[in-house]
Structures are given as structure tokens and as C-alpha cells.
Image (cartoon, rainbow, N blue to C red; front, top):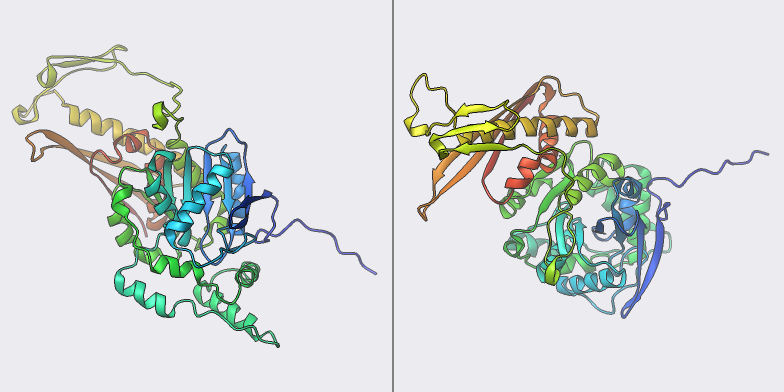
Length: 432
């Protein structure tokens, strides 16, 4: 007689290895899973419906390794959380989210929401911007009125339990139809999640279809658009990037809707880079203070004479005349602030691209970063600048390079400093 050897929980297992707990709230119990230490940046993760926080179980340890205090919760009525007493609206889910955050003892937080979770996080942020340090949308459904109405009528028809179990095949086929590339283990877990909600699994969908997100109210909140390249909402990139023009878009190739379990390290790296870049302590009256800052290097340059003067670094390595661009003639040896800024941005971004490549385990080959910085007049009579980065790596596949460039924008101090302040366009040219 043989004895089976116990194995570690599969990555798609409902339980996993994270610390788990329950909160007692007025409408019932809320289940959550947690990783990391309490003094790390607080990341609250809200899943898509009708699934659960188990989607994020494979990435929890990697997020903790980055120092994040991550709480992935089961939306009320989903996973192992109790159902709501009646149909809730998105504002009611958002109110509940803040009640959960308070019960967890968290103050300022970063929100990561996927699909339904993204809509809830957006509304929660709109209500309490003072407590949200940053947002990560792992696919946010910004439907127009026509699609919202069509989905409300047909998208989640539910199922009827059958004595012979035929409804299990109905659920399986629905999941397979939505996500044909997922593993059998992941599909099995999702069947269990559908069944835990009950035959009417579309309750949160109805809330989403009835809600119009106020994306304009989120302007100024540091936001990252992050999802797998094959996510079902990848089709909405044009609409979403138009709604969040200052948000970098990171697409993780080889991952779909469940990129947190398919590419957990890449997912955690991208999430942590954004969270750590936008973490701050609470300042006076609850206002965000300056992020923690550890000096690494200080450059000191003395400029006399303004744009027509001279720039000298304290090290002596830089000693160059400055010339107004409009007055520059052939043979002039001077430079201008825009050229100096372009040199710094290109060099820093090239370094950030190298970091991104190491995080992804990718060798890019030779890389050239060209920065163009333009000085221009604006309608109020003052001046502003705009920047353009051209990144070329002929030995790196185009899609891979695009992913690395998006990640580099979350790493590069120059990109972070100008985000939301000046227009930065990026041109990426990789290999075939």
C-alpha cells in the first residue's frame, strides 16, 4: 500500500499560506488575507467579482519581500465574506471599504483594485482623497452608456442548481469562455468562488453597470495602470489612458486577468515600485508630508548671469557657458538649461531601464535613450517645458521593451518628479 506525500498548497488554492482573519462588521463578517509587517506601507487589494482575494495569494509573499503591509480582502458577499443584506451600490461598497480599513487600524493607504475592485477603489478614493497615497488599477472598466446597458441586460445570467450537477459545467464553461488560457487548477478555484456566491453571482456586476465613475475627481492622485497583456480589459487602454493621462501603463506580457498568480514576481515588482515611490507619512491636519528621503548624492552647480551666464559645478567637472537658444550661432560652445535637463533625464532613464531589465530578468542589448526638452509659451504669458523620450533597443523585442519602458517610468526619479507637471511622451523602438 502506497502513502501519498503531502504537498504544499497549490498556487491557486483558496487558503494558501498567508495570515488570514475575519472582521466583525454590521452587515456580517469580512474575510481577509495579510502579508508583511504592520510598519510597512499599507496596500489594500480589492479583487474582481465574483471571485475572491485568493487571486492574489501567489503574490503575497513577494509583496511582503518588498516591505509592503498588504491586506487582500474578500468583498462583502464574495469569497469567505458574508453577503450584504440587500443589493448594494458602488457608493455603499466604497463606504464599507473605508469601514474595513478603519477596523484594520490603517490610516493612509494605497489601493489596488481589479475590475469591480477598481471601481470600488476609485469611488472610495473620491470620497477620502486625504487618506489615499496612490492608486493601482488592474483593469478598470470605463464602459460607455451603451455597453453598460447591454451588460446589465445580458452579462451575468446566473445559474440554476441541478440535481445532476449540470450547473457546474455551466459555470466551468463560462469561466473557460472568459479566460481560455488559464490553468485547470485556476478554473477549478474560480468554480468554487462562483459557487460560494450562489446562483446570482452578478450582484456586484449590477452595481458596476449602474455606476458612472468620476475619473476627473481623481486627478492628482498618483495612479498606475497595471495588468496582464491578455487581460480582458486590455481593449480599454485607449479610453483608460485618456481618463488618466498622467498614469503610466504597465502591461505584463504572458499574463492575463490572473497575472498575480501567473507572473507573481513581476506583478509584485511593479506594484512595489509604484507604492514605494508614493509612500509618505501623514503631515499636519492629515495632509501628506514629503516622502522619506535618504540622500545618496548631491550635485552642486553655481550659475551666474542666468541664461546668458556660466555654469560651474563644485567638482570642476562642469564649466560651460550658457547661451540663449534664440541667440545661438554656429560655432557657439555654450549650452542651455533644456540641453542640460535633457542630458540628465536621458541618463537617469537609461539607468532606470537597466534596473527594470534586471527585475524582469531581461537582457536588452544596446540601448539608446534620446531626450528632447522643449521650452514653450503657454496662454497665460508664462513659459513651460515638455519632454519627449525616444528609446531604441534593436536587440530587444518590441513588446518586451514597451513593458520595460513603462516600468522604468515608475523607477526613474526624473519621470516621477515631472509626472503630472509637464507633458512627457515616449517613443519606443525595439526589434521584431
